Image 1: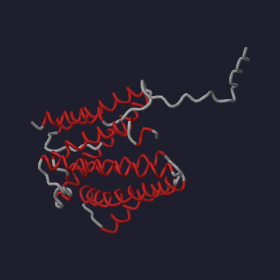
Image 2: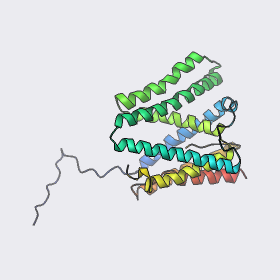
Image 3: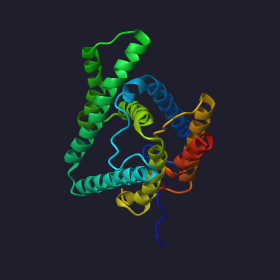
Length: 261
């Protein structure tokens, strides 16, 4: 007969049960995502004149329905190959190499998009434009990411910088992706997310484009994405691991299709 295990003392922490999804956590996530979405809509309005000068983003297979599907598939394949490479690097325990690659890719986007954003914001709100000022301010997110990556980890700083980058990327996509590609893009990556989490390389380990919508239609579309996010977080209370994209993206794309008819 085995001896009874002693109860944990007051000074000893109870065994960890893992982090659970709580109502407060869902509310914080919702507020955080709403902030990113609001920033993305504002930046889309401010940056649209700049992005429109370059036209649509590079589409090697054209902008027809078939070409848009092919371009989306190419993007998914690139992401898949990149994910495989990064997972292989982690399995080789090359943590520093992993950090350098991810840091380099992230700061390249952060610097270039912030350069455009700073100029648009200062020109619109302050009627002021200075290439030197834009350049200096664009180094701020780069410096913050470098600090949290290589010096001292800070979830608040990194989350803030990545929230800004998410809004900037959403703004860029909204202004440069052809409509059909923008509709196929979230669906394709939602399917890839399902594969990556359950069968693909991640099993072991929004952007939202608002096109020719009025304010009410855009708000309903954003609300649909947020509802999907909340429902996904609820499902995570029942299951430990789930892909995060499918439900929000399906609801968001369905809303876009409804209003664009």
